[in-house]
Amino acid sequence: MSLVKWIDFPSLADSRGSLVAVEMGQDKAVPFGIKRVYYIYHTEQGVSRGYHAHKQLKQVAICLAGKCRMVLDDGTDREEAWLDRPTKGLVIGDMVWREMHDFSKDCVLLVLASEHYDESDYIRDYETFQKMARKTV
Ligand code: TYD
Image (cartoon, rainbow, N blue to C red):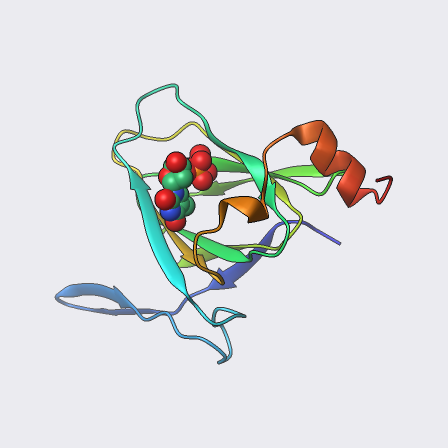
């Protein structure tokens, strides 16, 4: 099964421009209750972010402007996806290692999260993550 799972948000476009509504629990919607929203922007050129997984947290990432490349890794397989349009939400499950690379200067990455911020939910060491993901610890 692919690690890359998209939600395609319908764009309500008319002569004035476009609008996307993000909802929970509907078809084409975020598959969890949203407790937190944050966004990443003004990322310096050449900088990569992420390099962690979460034990419980589920997220949906939507690139509102510009683009970036997301790498997802479940401890066995590694896949990548370009986030480059505001109508595509990338669903990132728990126990998925993520890295974000190649941010364009204008990139604004919105992240919807299932839980409040909790540093103890982070796994920031790749080898530890891989062992946990493969259930060897
Ligand atoms: P971090 O999760 O390391 O960012 P990234 O995954 O983009 O590399 O977070 C960067 C800093 O911001 C870190 O000190 C934790 C803090 N932070 C919060 O206080 N609240 C939040 O919701 C998030 C996501 C991060």
